[in-house]
Image 1 (cartoon, rainbow, N blue to C red):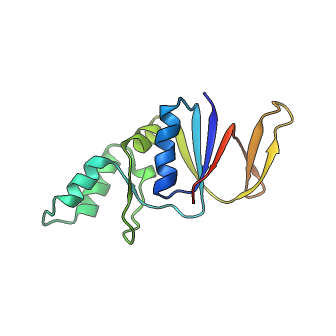
Image 2 (image 1 turned 90 degrees about the vertical axis):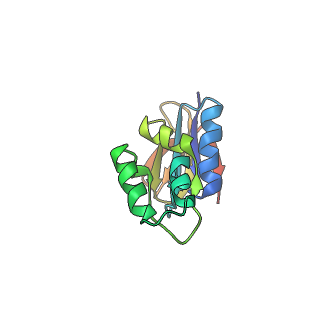
Length: 133
């Protein structure tokens, strides 16, 4: 499998996490300046049910119990991206989100592999880089 870096945490970036997993990615790193809401499908069913309760609070509690809270934000201004695969990948360490900005591309001197440089400091291996703004 390959290491994939995705720039952007919107619906298109989240969709590419799923696509990378389907194609056997070893690891996926999403780089973003702003995190957006991402919900598993069961949470969207809860929101769409129209029940008389605070669905966001119930969903937050459900994700916390499932130990998925680190992959969830509460930006209610936009319709959230929906991806069960995103949550599974985050839960099992196949994907991660790094808050920062891509400041360059380089080659690792030891491994001769391409890397993405984040905030002029962190170097993330990147066999494939995708811009998903």
